[in-house]
Image (cartoon, rainbow, N blue to C red; front, side):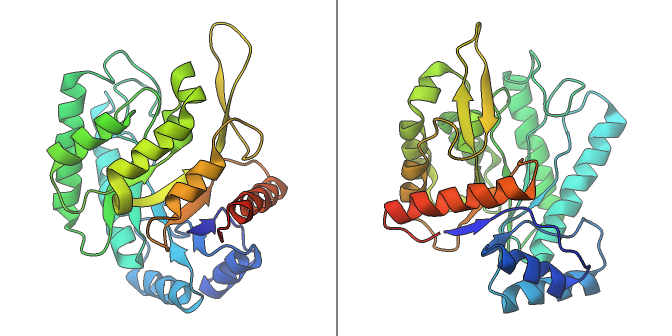
Length: 277
């Protein structure tokens, strides 16, 4: 496993970026470049990452190819294609996006999100993205969400089967799959089931924490690692059986100090389990 998170180098350029990553003790990083970056620049960052022994975990797209607005959907598709092409060129382990929402909010819930029609549309769009790029080194993957596909181990397995592309991979965000009390209290089993189902097809992992409040009707929040109920010891132990270069990426923390605290906590959890992170 390789821990990573967001970094903000004071200076621009590949050497400043790798120095900032290594200064945090990270051995993995998010892609620092946007789609459309000149190939000459991409090449320098890929070489710098290799020289510094940094794995580029993922290129994030975060656009909605299922948007009801045709112009937005078209632009999102183009962004997905560009992101996958960048991931392949820079040597990232995956390009990741959400499947998308049928509503106006790109990442939001909608009554049609979990319909058979939407599932088939996700399969079709994902196939088109992969076929457009034909990546050789990376994969396209979908991040799970509580209210859209894939929202479970079974739905992810079905997507893998029906998309049926070798360059479709798996992204793991266990917190995003905790969408009910059963998964909240049974999240250790959820983690074990996911890792058992997908193994080394998992290309990148988001590590956070989750808490369910004592408030009606039900309120579940993402929180900083170490302040919730996610079985982080189980997560790290299970992931340790996979590819040693698997990135475990912190995200969504508002300050650098919180990233530092989260990284320190995860290293403590790993050390207690006899693991290195």
